[in-house]
Length: 250
Length: 323
Ligand SMILES: Cc1cc2nc3c(=O)[nH]c(=O)nc-3n(C[C@H](O)[C@H](O)[C@H](O)COP(=O)(O)OP(=O)(O)OC[C@H]3O[C@@H](n4cnc5c(N)ncnc54)[C@H](O)[C@@H]3O)c2cc1C
Ligand SMILES: Nc1ncnc2c1ncn2[C@@H]1O[C@H](COP(=O)(O)O)[C@@H](O)[C@H]1O
Image 1 (cartoon, chains in turn yellow, orange):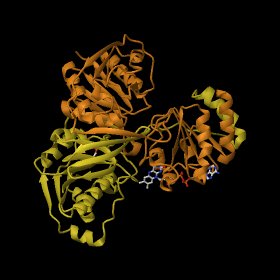
Image 2 (image 1 turned 90 degrees about the vertical axis):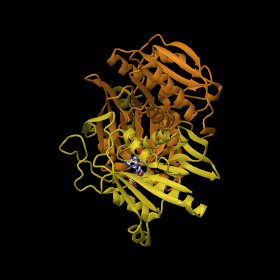
Image 3 (image 1 turned 60 degrees about the horizontal axis):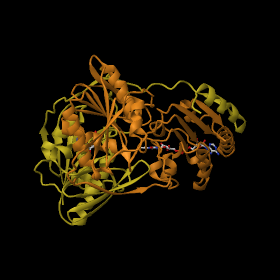
Image 4 (image 1 turned 30 degrees about the vertical axis):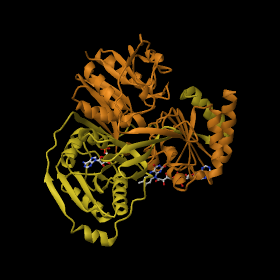
């Protein structure tokens, strides 16, 4: 099994968001960056598939700044074999341009599976995986929460509103991974040491800006100060009155 | 032509509720562009409810029909929608950011070679460009984005674009299309126990660790039932991780993002990761015995008290209201 996993360097989910002076981006001062949590499911799944097959290679690809080498090293410490950093100072807001850069690296790679996270927790875009699949003309299943592979055929489950969809597909394929697919392992000390010696190729890349322009980044609208209606069950009639007459939601 | 294409959604031959939101959002955009709205349904044949899309502002409702399109077929749907979008020279294509829409919109955008703004909460036209709002960093910031390519492809966060009646002709047309066998095939759907999904319900009642044990969720289920089928029961991560409730019900940063008309948080402290999933709800009610719980900072209305006394009383009063 030859498997590629695309990973993104993202701010830790605990980050306090401070907007930079340009009014369009995150102020990165003091921000801790991590491997996108959904991509951990993708890395873990790739490792398990390689282990089951008893042979193969797991290649980690990331588009990002020089510091994304650390992100790749995290995946290598988990057990991936080698990494490729498509180095750029600016990740375009347009996911299609990210997809184009990744697809150019992945094409003709001879991969049985190309794995992505369901979404990046910074931009919440849910799009790079299926876009790469279209660009490479590969079958694609998104938000996979359960996966079976037998030979050249796969069967996946994905959550939809009010149920679970069962999807069948042939390999090679692109999959995006959701929570529930597996429990990602923590890199062991031995893995962290080994990762330092694994090959990591850096390729300067200049993605186009694409068709999405950031006009501004703003804090979310403040909710107006709420009120405590009262205490205990005695407050319920007044709560209902307010929901009906003031909020008009009943 | 500079029309707006609104991609509606059906399941098992019936139109899904998000479709009226998609047409409402598309209408808003079309008004700003002085354009028409074409609603598009991909289905096996005529779809129940499609004729009502005119009521929300569709000038025309087109059903691309093929017996193979009864169920979602990712590749087939993407191809016929992209073909239609290309042939029609649309100014914008609007999807729902539902499970299917989030899967489909990137495929269509990639086929058209244009950018996609996914999961947006507002859409306007500024200086001739389609401009949208998109929450990032778990809702801790909002990005204002301008789409410079044509068509502008967007998907709308469910429950944000409240359907508005804007009667238009809504003339229906059924167009047979061919459906080359896709490589990716949906072979079945397992229905979850509670049929109404938290991401789509107009009322969400979520429970947290304050419920004390899984069996006590029946208190919230009774309240949901009192609302008569419009309400779904959600959960905090604490109770999902404890195995009390399924992950599908989890609201928050690592669960679902919900924007119901009414969100009732019961026995939930209001951690930042929980707020990430529900802060855009229209009205938030909190019931918690700790008057200093952070949930009261975002709640429009709070009741301080023991949920096991407050919720049954609330259920009783709602029943009276609906009875
Ligand atoms: C990376 C990351 C991602 C996360 N993602 C999510 C997420 O998606 N969703 C999420 O919810 N959390 C998420 N969390 C967890 C979050 O930080 C909180 O731990 C969690 O939301 C707490 O759940 P809770 O409010 O049910 O429990 P608690 O914080 O324990 O709160 C229980 C509340 O119940 C009240 N209570 C107790 N008894 C009663 C009673 N009888 N009547 C009334 N009130 C009572 C208490 O006063 C208390 O406020 C995430 C955390 C991390 C680190
Ligand atoms: N800059 C990037 N480099 C590598 N992979 C990426 C990058 N951006 C996104 N991805 C992949 O695409 C997935 C979805 O990201 P997004 O569409 O941005 O939500 C992520 O989970 C990653 O697997």
